Image (cartoon, rainbow, N blue to C red):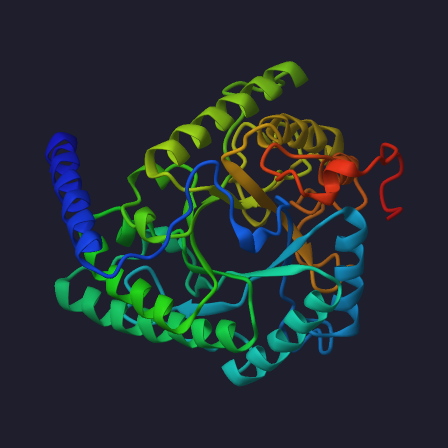
Length: 389
């Protein structure tokens, strides 16, 4: 199929989905300048805390005392939200079903997560729940394709059961925001997106909080379900440069270009935007191809200064964009002392120069803070020592 024909079909689909939306019971949406009462006047300064569910690490995951230490560090970092990321499994990229068991049974995972949510709320942190899909045989979830109409129907039915399980959990646990999916490019940027809408509306019926969807940075403009959301989510691994050894000034320029894209998207859909994930690895030129995963790299030089420079570039645009209501750093782990979860050049900013930039950014004012935000009345000295929270 040619790109012209494909774009034409997608345009027709968007029009059809809009007609469906207008015929359904309207959900109250936010209006410019993107005030969300649920945010309490404070932009989302978020940290993703990844799970450690393996039987090799008992009592170190969500809800554990080590997780509480991580929450305490997040608070001192200046975070106002945390993102928690349970997983389901698809066997391969042709899967027609989703298993809601990932390393531990669903009931056990949800029990731990319910405790984790209470622990976060006890510290004044709000919670975003982001159920992910893990492709067991390898591959990226965005490329899942059951291949046939029947295969897609089975996959949609199975995903419906998976996400409704988590929506009901989120409602019962008083989770503040729920992501209805993560990087489901092959589904929600194509003519198959119509089958996602009934699922999203069923989620809305059982979960009363804010809804988002975590699109990948390079396909959010083609994602056709954005009109049904409260907040447009982006996994924001944007490149800030197209060449090696970019200067700090060039990286800041790249961050400002990202901000322009965010503003245009928000204005188009009349919805606020949230970076459901953002971050950079601690290696040479992390802003050149930020999506390259540490697990798939070899012979890499650790470069914490380059990580910090990339963060500075992106944050320069983020903080001054009123349409962007915040973002979640990718990422820390439920056990702060466990260094086995990613390579030394991985994403975690903990104990590195990037941590200083995040502390200064999180404790400072953002353009999307409302006038009542206590952050606008704070004075705090610049952070100087990584690891000292």
